[in-house]
Each structure stands twice: as structure tokens, then as C-alpha cells.
Image 1 (spheres, rainbow, N blue to C red):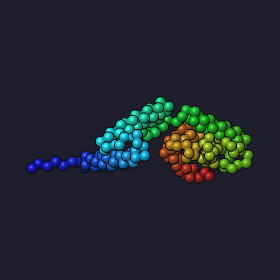
Image 2: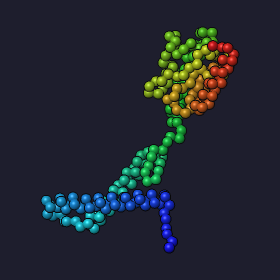
Image 3: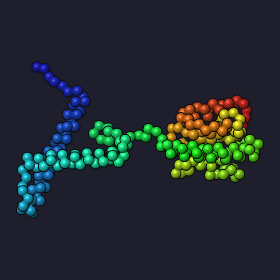
Image 4: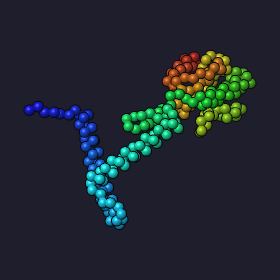
Length: 212
């Protein structure tokens, strides 16, 4: 005789549905016992049979579903585009691009650092500060706009307007793209992997040239 066999996925789903139905029927029985137990102290409450208890569970479930749908709709109206449906649930939609005001603030902070470094270089024969703890350079300019005011990365030994080398860059807290200040005075925005590759190549050039 022919036999039917479910696929692994179908069997797994049938197991889940079966478990849910058994749990639902068991909870209905518990609900019936609790209701009838309370009805003993309140004579006006009708006694429930199992079919009636099951009907009340279904109605209450539908009511809760409507309420949750309304909450989800209100949440979407308050934060449009912030939630993405994943199956029967919702998850926060990942940010596709940086907030314009935040990106502008990051760039302005790097521009202030550039101004301070090049003013310093004019007074020191084109040389930038020897390190980030130099007493004759404003420490505040080394710090980013993040809540912890993390210090910018810095490559000492560069000279103003000599070459196109990395001088300063945003630290790890700024994500996968960083603003970078070059010795030419240009500020660029690089992905992290490009920044790492460029820094490595520049270091190899410095070692090959014998410069400190």
C-alpha cells in the first residue's frame, strides 16, 4: 500500500502546531477550573462547560490580537520606517545612512582639528605636534564629539602640506566609515578597510625611506 511521508520541514511545523493546540486545550481546561472555582463564591456567575470555556478563549485571543495590531500600527505611525516585519514579529530596521546632522558635526570637529594643526605648523616650521599630549596644543581639539570624547587617532612626524599622508582619523566608535585628515589639509571619508590599507602602505613607505 502507498504510504505518505512528510518532509523534515513539514514534520517540524506539524510538531509545533500540535504542541500549540495541546497547550491551548490544556490552558482552556485550566481556565474552566479557575472560572468555576470563582463561580462558587459568586452565585451570579454562570458555570462554564468545556466548549464554552474554549469559545471564551478564542474570543479573548481574537480581542488581544486586535489590540496588539493596533499597538503595532501606532508604533509604526510614531516611528515610520523604523520597524521591519520578520515573520510574525517586528524588528528595528538597521540605520541605512548616518544622520545628516551627526555627519556634519563629525566633519566640523575634524575641520577644527585641521585648523588647529595647521596653525601650530605655521609656528613650528611646518611640523605638527609630536604627540597628542603636547602642552602647546589645545587638548580639546584631539577629542571627538562622541559621548566619551574619544581621542582621535594620530600619526606624528608628518609635516604640513608635504605629501598626502594620514595625519589624524576618527577612532573606532564612529563605525565603518571614518573622517580622515591628510597632510595636504584635505579631509576625506573612508571605509574602515580602505583606511587600514592606506595606513599600512604609508607605514611601509616611511620605513623604506628611513624617516622616523
